[in-house]
Length: 520
Image: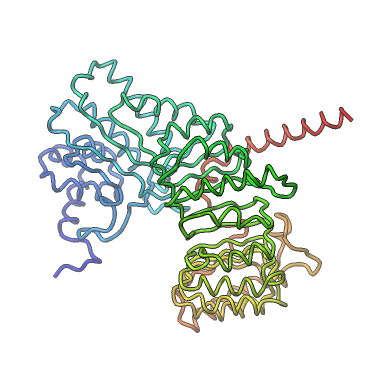
C-alpha cells in the first residue's frame, strides 16, 4: 500500500529522468500526455528551466493550473503551488509564449486556461535558488510577454496559424507607476493577443488617481474578486464615491482602501451624504466579506459604513480608526460579530476605554475568530485581566498579534498561560516587555526606542515563554517578536519605488505649506 506522505515510484522515476537533462530533452516529446503534470512538478521542484520550457511549450491538456499541478498529489505529497521560484516560474511564463509560437498544427493545441492565482509571496522561498518572482515582477513579465508575442506574430506572419488560439491567463496583478504603461498596453491589446490577461485580484500602489480610474476599467472589474488600493494612492471618500458610482464590482469579495480615505473629524452634512452613498454602493457587492479601512478616521460613523452591507464580514481591519464607544457597541451587537474570522483593532485602547464591549465582541466572535490583531492598544498590567477573559473563549483562534503593548514580563507570561489552552493556536507575535526598556519610555515606541532594549533580559523572557509552551506540550505554537511588524511581500518588492513616491509627496506637501505661508 502506497503511503500518501511519501513520493511514489512514478515520481522518483520522473526525478531520475530529469536528472540527466540532455537525455530528458531528447525523449520528453515522446512521453505520454498524462505524464506531463508529473514531469512538470518534478522539473519545477528541481528548477530544470529548459525542461520546463519544453513541457509548457508542448502542453497537451486544456488547463494549466498551478494549484492543481503543483499542489498535493498522490505521486508527491508536498504542496509547492505557493512557490514563486524565480527560475522555474520564469521558465513557465516564457513557455506560454513559446506554446503560441510553436509550429505544431493548430488542432493539437488544446490549452484554454492558465491559472497562476495559487502562487503566494512568502518571506523565505523554499526553492533552491532562494529567489522569488514577486507579484509585481510577475505582472510586469506577463504584460511584457503579451506585448512581445504580438510583435512576434506580426513580424513572423503567424497570424493565420494562431487565429483560433485563445488562452485565458488568470492572475493577480500588482500595478504601480513604474509598470503602469506596460500593463495598460497589454490590457488594451488583449483582444488581439492569444494570451489574454484575466485579473482576479488587483493591487494598486503609488499611482495617480486618473491612472487608477483608467486602468481599473481595463482589468475587467466585473470579475475582480479582490481590490487593494494602498499606501501612496491619494484616494479620499469623494474619489471613492465617483469610483463606485462609475465602476461596478459585482464579484468583489475583498476591499482594501488606503490611509485617510475617510476622515470624519470635520464632517459636513454633504460629507455624511457621501458616506451614506458609499455604504449603499458597498451593499450592492453581495459577495463582499472582507473590508480593510485601517488608518481612516471613522469616529462614530462605523455603523454608516457597515450596516448597509448585505453579507456579514469575515475580515474587518479597522486599525487606528479612532473608534469610540458608539462604534464598538455597534460592532459588538452587529451581525458581523458572529462571522468574523479576522479582526484588527490595533491602535485602540480597548481594554481601558470599552472593556465590557470588547469582551462582548470577542464572545460573539469566539466561534469563528481565527486571527486577532491588537497592536499598540495600550494594554498594560492593570488591564491584562480583560485580555485573559476575552481570549479564553476564542477556541478557534489560530493567530494572535499584540506587538507594542506596555506589558511587563509577568503579564506576558499570564497571557501565554491562557494562550496554551487555545487548541487551534499556531502563531503568536508578542511584544518586548516593558521592563526590558528604560523606565522612562513612553508608548507607542518610536522606531529608535523600539530597538533599545536589554537583550539579556529579553532572552530570559523568551526562554520563560518557551518553557510555558513546552510544559503545556504546545511546541506547535510559534511565538515570535518581529520588531517592525510582519513581513509584507508587496512592500518588500516595491520599497524603493514607494520610498521615492513618499519623498515626492512630502516635498509637494512642504511646497504647499510654504506657498500658504507666503500668502499670509
